[in-house]
Image (cartoon, rainbow, N blue to C red):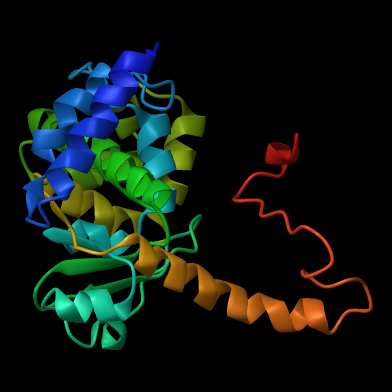
Length: 250
């Protein structure tokens, strides 16, 4: 179970490393992440068990283009990306995941995934999701390589569903995993089989003002809808923002 100290250590570790605006490896952040023993990543420390629930969770929240990514770059706006050496990032193809609406762009020619972030909590979410994703991806990679010497053997196991026994999971877990991998789950299994991930992350230098600008742009799309209603506007009453879960109202 996570302790306050282990959580604070993990947060300090990656926030301090990212402040340099240099590229850092996900491997360098893995140790402090696993020491938390998070309830969202219960089998992270066990190299022999693929944490299927965690892998499914991260696959749904990260774009499939991460399979082909070498560097994840986070920035608060297109201007921050341009100042950081990535001009015209909005001209790259968008790549939304299934369960997150955060704006992402992917450049396949240089294998870079650009993440538009709006707050420090976005950084927390992205970093921990990617660390968990790479950890479980690589465990699955090693397991598949161990049991299936050739790719054709893996494909046969997927077709016959004997892979369920290899992974020591339930049919329901297998169904969830395939759904999280998408319609081309067989292709993505091929990628997992062939690739040991060594992702890098970079946070572009920005400021609190840039976060404010991002929030203002977000609000600019909402304000006209409030103004068109007969009810009092934001100037007359408080506005409550619910991040993702309605139970946060409690």
